Image (cartoon, rainbow, N blue to C red; front, side):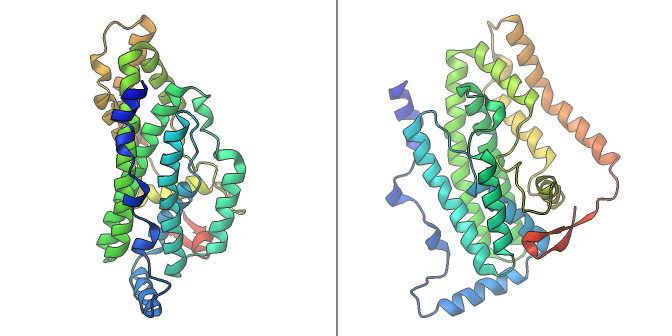
Length: 306
C-alpha cells in the first residue's frame, strides 16, 4: 500500500516551491502603488451584491475551519497545509474589499473552531472508510462551490476575484482526485465493507465542515447561509445529488459483484439514492413558500433574500 500511495496519491501534492501563495493574488504591501491597487480592488468589489459576499464569507469560514484528518498523517498534514492557503487568501481579500464586517467574521471562525469541528465529522466515527468517503464528497462539494463563485464573480465583472476562486477550485479538484482514488482502492480491496460504509455515510447524510457555524447572534446561521448559497446557485441541493451520482459512477458501484446480501442492499440503496434526492427536492421546491429576508452580521446586518 505504501508504494501504491506514493505512486497514486502523493503525485497529487505539489512541492511548496511550486504552489501559489495568497500574496500572488493580492496588492503588494511593499509597493509604492499599494494604495492604488487596494483602491482598484475595492472599486471592483463595489459592483458585487451583498448576497454574493455572504456566500464568499461562508466559503472562507469553511476553509478556515476544515477538519484535520489523522489517517495517513504525513500526507494529510501536507493536504491541510495546501488548504490553509485557501482560507488565508479569501480572508485577506475580504479584509481589503471593505465590504464585510471582519470582526463578526473573526468571531464566527473562533466560535466554529471552538465548537470542536476541527475533529472529524461525527458521522465518520473514526472509520477510515467513512472518513475517506466523507472527504471525497466534501472536496468535490468545495470544488463545485468555488467554481460557482468564480463564475458569478466573472459575471459581475471582477476578474481578479474570479481568478482567486477558480484557483482555489482547481486545488480542491486535485484533492478530490486523490481522495476518490483512495476509496477506489478500498473498493478493490474490500468491496463489501466499502459499499456498506458508503451506504452508511449516505444514510447519515453528509454534513459540511461548517455546519456548526455561529456568529454570536444567529442560531441558524449555517441554514441561512446554505439557503442563500442555494438561491444564488453557488451550492445547491441538486449539487448534492450530482456529487453522489458522480461518485457512484466513479467508483463503479453498480458493477460490484460477489457482495453479501447486506452489501447488495447497500449497493442498491446508493445507486437509487440520487434520483430519489432529486424527486424530493423538486417536491420541496414546488411547495416552497416565499423565503424571508434575513440580516447577516457579516455584511453589517444588511438583509439578504433567502
